[in-house]
Amino acid sequence: MSDTSGSAPVLSPEPPRDVLAARARAEEIVSAEAVQFAIDQTAVRLTVALNDANPVLLCVLHGGLAYTGELLKRLPFPLELSYVHVGRYGDATRGQGLTWFARPTLELARRHVLLIDDIFDQGKTLSALVAWSFAQGAAAVTTTVLVDKLLKSQRGEAISIDYAALRCRDRYLFGCGMDYRGYWRNLPAIYALPRDMENQHA
Image (cartoon, rainbow, N blue to C red):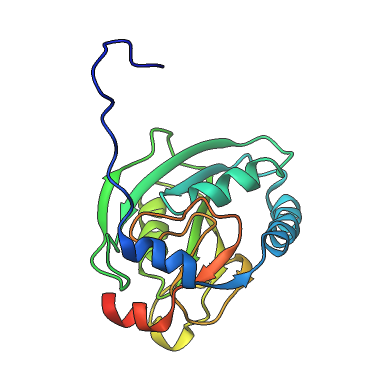
């Protein structure tokens, strides 16, 4: 919609310099083509497992949004979609306490819940969401993430992921729904933040 008031347009501020530097200096970890292939394969496995389950898909916002959208195009069986909005990171690159922003509007009692998130590192977020889903009366809970960071030694009592599309080494990752300071979720490939920038924001 154009501005017809005659006044000068209000310009948005430019992205922070470190956000631009992160993209310019990032190392591509997984290509866009490899991401799509991995999601294809995971969708096949989920279809075999959940085809007759009439599941509720719960997208974990914001990170799980891109992965959920890709899965939805590939799952041919009846399902319902909702979301939860929780956070741990904020603008930091290391995990903090779990914060709830929104809960699903669909009833979970006696349903098979599929939790969909972007990344599994220490496992605290998804472990809390699995426990919460069962507390709401879910009959079963399945978990899937785009990326498993393989940090088993740091997970303690955290759950194991049922379906991980990709497995990556322990780096700060962005792209495909994962962000750096709120930016770059829109990138189709997965990138690693330069290690010196990880140290600046740890």
